[in-house]
Image 1 (tube, rainbow, N blue to C red):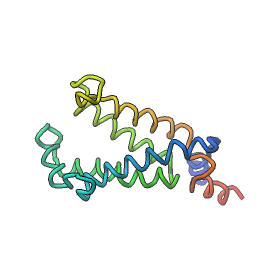
Image 2: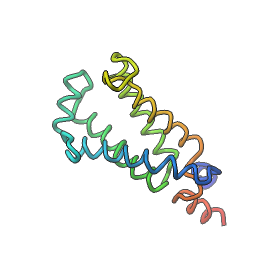
Image 3: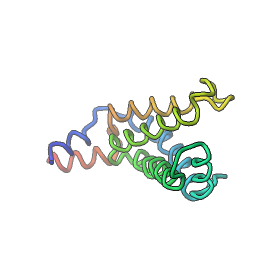
Image 4: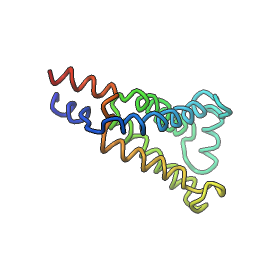
Length: 148
């Protein structure tokens, strides 16, 4: 168990982890807050759930809760660098679902509600899943405590 946790926490990314984590974490947390709490012009769980159900993602309320939670709590975890790899994997999966259920039919470009933004987030999240949180992360602090 300890060995698996150490592998999840360990990262040699240096400052690159923070440079990637901070903006991605903030963006995801803000998008999740739109879905969960109707902040920043979002529709909250009810509105997002109704929209998801209307495009065939059912049950809409549950899917809105799952997507919003993955984005909000995953974004906060990324911002802090806490369990970066698992948070990045969950958020990356959420981006794939968004790409293939909402955006893929609209082409690449955002101007047509395409998948370029979701793809960009997915790639950044995949990089974080591979490299981990980096030197300035709670993961690194925990890694040092567990390894001493």
